[in-house]
Amino acid sequence: MELNSILSNNNDKVDWDLIKSDIETMYSTWTTVLMDLTTLNVNKDNLLKYNDTLGKIVDNLENEDKETALVNLADLYNLLTLYIQDFSNDNNNKSLFIVKSNILYAYAYIETDDWDKVNDYVSKAKTEFANIINGQVNNVSKIDKINKAYILINEVEKNSNDKNKNVFYVNYINLIQELENL
Image (cartoon, rainbow, N blue to C red):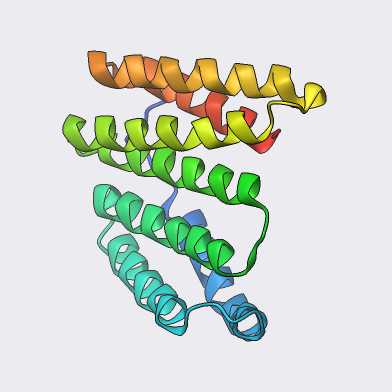
């Protein structure tokens, strides 16, 4: 059994080598993904931003700049939401990616103690989640999961208003896991 608790872990310790390895993998697969996204008529300017953002992240990792790396990683995920908006017809899926992107930005900005931005992104996530609720109102099989995610978004919002980092981290992890189940 391994102790893996958010509250007992040191959030300042980063496995830079593991992240660098993951970024290298992203670089090596990007060409194939780029070709696929091009055939789906994804906005070419947004496709070009991926490589630029990935380059910024490499610089952040080399400098072990956690705060800026987190914001740039959130930018990278946000590009994914833009790509999906370009080719997907599934409005619920689009909204789900937008919610995740906003929550990821909130997480990134909590590391910089910019509570105004944290609150802004959590608010955007909560507003966008209303689209998921409205789009799934007749989907009885998902109503429990949707309600749980909605409660967790409200908890994250309360944590950000209270400027409570540790509880925010716990609720963030739970929220992301619940959004993955939708």
